[in-house]
Length: 328
Image (cartoon, rainbow, N blue to C red; front, side, top):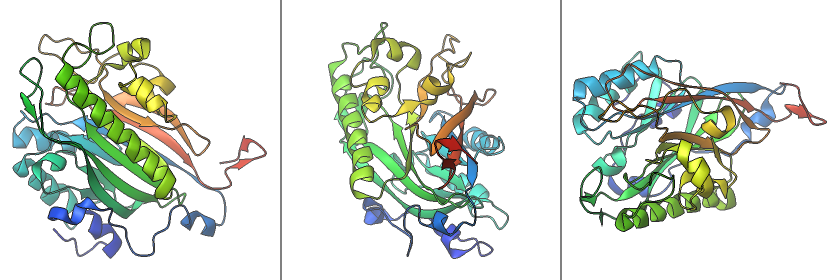
């Protein structure tokens, strides 16, 4: 679990949390949002590449691990994963990618299976670990057999990670999610699966509350929302149902990469019949001068029925804008 060649601040991130320790955000000593940037000699910008990937619970440990390993080799900096509840899969990722002597990655992998299904990994050479926790936003819920997944859905969580971007001094939050499936109708709005719809709405309201709390009580920073939202962006942008991502996150000023950069020619999910145009995996953020989406791509050829979405961002440090013009 420990990597003796890495500094204490980096090794903390690779720890597997124990029980209730994760119920409150665990900060590193002396950390304060965005203050490190004040010590910089000149304004600095950095590139941060964030990926969201549902590894597929049905994949074997070997295939699931190989997919994660291959994704890390794609030049990403932060990886938010879903459907990683398998202890064997999580342990293989931890031992081989996070805790080896030559590893350059750290990770936040909650121990309980349900929140543990949404770990977040990051490059230890680019970021300093500040804190992590998980927040339950909905209880275990019976949703019925009419739809994908089990009839009784596990409790829903927002798994949170807080990092410091070493180059710019910006605080970065990652909020990782996995929403209940089979909620969207053909027109892009909600379908008639009322139990699933109620659960989806409760999860979304909880996510909105987490975003609000970060800005109101926890010092703010750059917030990125990741996960499998089980709602196709192509239709959601048309219907704009108030509980689905386009409208619901839009109330907080958040936009998906698809809104900022356009819709890719392929999708992030492959159905059993081979249809692969659905965009249900997201990286969303609040566009400002501090953070600008510059590119996105979908990785194909992996074992999961989902495809990783990688989004590149330009993160501007303090002083990168002078008289309304960028200088970084």
